[in-house]
Image 1 (cartoon, one colour):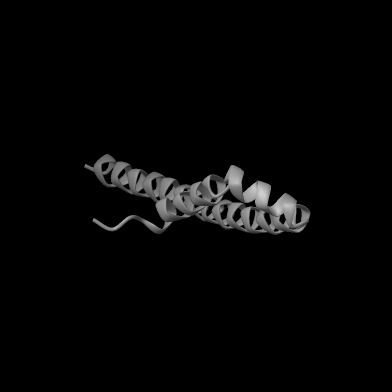
Image 2 (tube, helix red, strand yellow):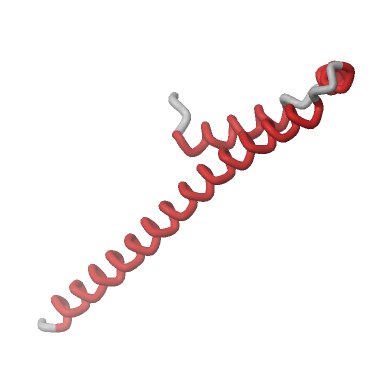
Length: 84
């Protein structure tokens, strides 16, 4: 079964977090690149978080729309059965 695009977002974020490796950090320190690497990593993680926030906002809007549709349908059913 394919993972949803939403599940993939969290998997990608987990991969970014797990990408921090002690040996790699030591190598970055030795090469004098730790700060630039850390800033680059931070930018990538912030972008991924922003993507997830947009998905959450979209899902919340869709949820509100579905709730309103459900209320509208419930009201229509009530009016229909109320006539008989």
